[in-house]
Image 1 (cartoon, rainbow over the protein chains, first blue to last red):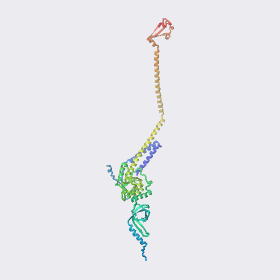
Image 2: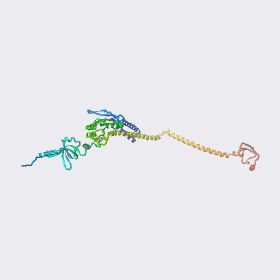
Image 3: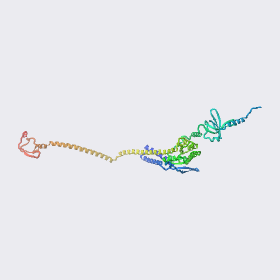
Image 4: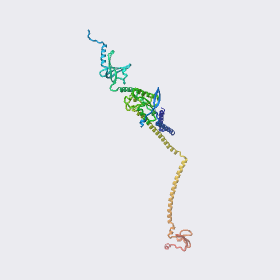
Length: 80
Length: 405
């Protein structure tokens, strides 16, 4: 949930920076600062979407308490 | 003596009761429900009618508990039961054991009725639909962990959005317990909280197989979910109640996973576009500033630069001047040369070469052109083409020119 929130915030912030920069009401110094921030945000967002490590888990409930169990994927048959 | 057989009301009613109840023990009757009155006891009372007649009907709680659909006025039904006579009122009525809706399956009717009720209640209203996350990062799946649906979703996500984490709450997806388990699983995810999207799904099957997703309890669980839900039931268009209530519904579990992959691809394209715009804005700005800078530099020329500029101008002028002078000198030289040539032609020395000579009176150095200027004894210098000599005048002869020659 944490990553999702920061992701949405980052995208929104990036959109704002793009708008501000294209309105060209900023000084060169401000522009370059925003530009730098924008490039960093775009990079961060892209890398979040390129992350290849996912987790697949089973949600278990016992006596009203939740726990997670690794889920064994049987994906070999499709990859043959 | 009265030979007439007189019956009491009770007696005749009893006769009628026996007659009717024996004759109409197991009968099927078709008619339309009207004046439907459920009683607090749980029994149903209503009138069956057609165009010409009416028949009182009752369905006791014991029997109507089995009804899948709801009785309501106007409904055309086929009933199975028996005729019963109720002496205290002198009335006969049909006691119904079973009812089938006419022209439509009971389950289908129940579904339509429930759908109608939930619709009226606003469960399908678009205003209650929650938007999906900009990008789901942790997806909860309500389905059987052994089914094809979960396998399809996992495979598509792995290929297209491998950063998406998946949490599965395994439930039965058909049979009597299924609806309750599905509803509980949706509630569990809401309690667990650590997913940002829920996919409620199962693979294709018959209408009966998919029926759990038409149950009210499932529809309500989806409606009550605070987490956005995607419903993906079956393998073709057979809209379930879960589809109608969910925030988003797609035809198959694979399509649900594709929504997530599409979101990712759109975002990546959007990010690319924004990066482009950033570069474009900044390079435009830099270009603009560069032009300003050149203009400013022109305005800020140093005195030395100006001096150098003037010197350069001077040098150029000098150079041009020099070239002009050389040119004029050339012309002058040529002129002089031709003049000298002319002069040479006119020189008396040239005449001498042809055999003429010049004589100069020594005392005044003037060329002698007139003999009258001479006296005997004058010294005369005669210049020849080659060399000269001095002689003395012996005699002056005037007017002798022609004869001499």
